[in-house]
Length: 224
Image (tube, rainbow, N blue to C red):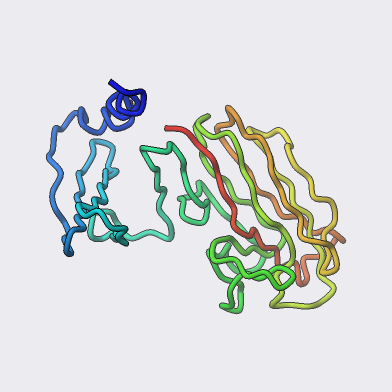
């Protein structure tokens, strides 16, 4: 048996899906050509999803939360059982999110425009006006958090913010004061073993006016 085959057969996350207590079978929820989508409800309310390509050519295979029996939500956590990686935080359910002006927004600014920092447009990300706090539950399973940070280009004014990240209450990152002229900050922090990740946006210069903070392309690297 090759090492690659042994790794596939010994994948504990996949075995756990197979041995999920209710023993419910996966059901075909969509089929288009050689592409199949199979969903299996799990004991904890989650769903295991198989996106299968039976052809030898690359295929685009996708589904929706509704199609796999999941309730509507602002965001869903998605875990790849092969790579053991959890994807963009804007696609995850936060524990809580508060912002002093409007809500924390996903993948767009307050004005509905794409998240943009110094001319760079981000498909994925978060927008918040200072003061803002966002909490994510990591459960000790993640090792790294990265994001591009800066004021959104939708408001070119005198606003300032500062970004601070906390892992289980311990500060692990501080951007210092960020203005419209500050170069994009590229945060890359170690969150190994942390159960709670807090993303905090402060006033910067003591006022919340025009404190339009972006988290561009935030990513968490996690294991199963």
